[in-house]
Image (cartoon, rainbow, N blue to C red; front, side):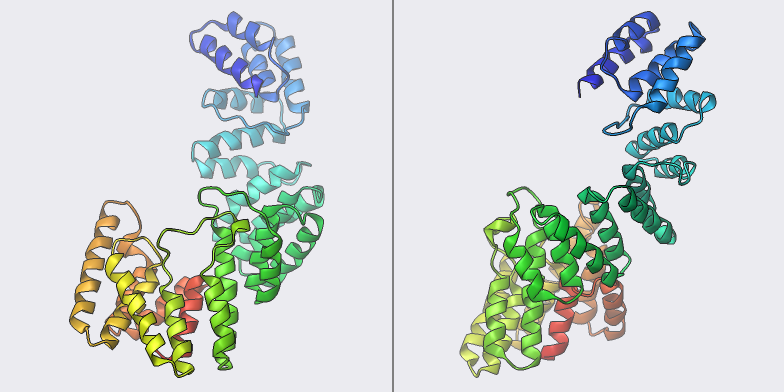
Length: 404
């Protein structure tokens, strides 16, 4: 954005009190609302007429791809609000407050705009701000719906409304929107993942896997959303099979859940945490009468747990570690394991490196280990609220199904 180079140089002059030089730089800049706001501000004492003209140009320009962020622009826009009432000025000021993490001030500016803007990204922005406030869910939903009405040709307007419905647990509405979104933008990988997630939330797991097979995500750091959905869809189908005692069919989907398809953009970790899968495979082998094979899977759980005490992994899988040790008569080692793990996670919590022992998932493992079933039940409700097909929800279902 070349305009930012002009603004940066002009602000250096303005900060030194060299107003003429700042004006000279900005008058050579490409057109931009932010530039015109600054010119109006700098001319306010020198030429009120020019100031008024530049301010009018600023508010008449499209806000597309305009993202002011500099602190120095706050007094400029505050001055502009007093001289020309426009929702765009409030919007730009709100963006700056949002950028510097003053979200309440940002909300205040965007709320003042009411429903007068005819610009879809405005409603997306305000919707995102409000969506983080549970008491404002309805208002956020209205903003996302308005964004879609204003611009249904942009995938983002569909995406944010779909995501809002997921966050509020309205999975039927989420699926309705994502079906239309996917029909409009089938080749967009972000849309594909969002649609797969909505299918998972609506228990349409095989359809979910079909969509994932068509998605192509470029490899990138933290691009693991696709794999997470793929894993959960396969495990959910496996549990459906286990409820019908179809152990061989369940084994196929459990083993599939261990895979890391290349098209989903995330490479397989060097030593992935597959203890949930190994526990279910052990259950399948036991159901088929292959007790030796089942014992091998239980041993894999124990071996992995011994070697990965400090691994971030999936906290609830440590439940299988202690259960497998106790089942093999290693109750003392199970106790040592849980105490060492608790000490490790306390350290991460105290030094604010990670949530560590303060997380509900960690507390759940402890509650289960110490047979505090009522506490464990309450934690389960807290963790799975509005997340019926989360990995933790699948783990809880697996435990209840297998009777561990």
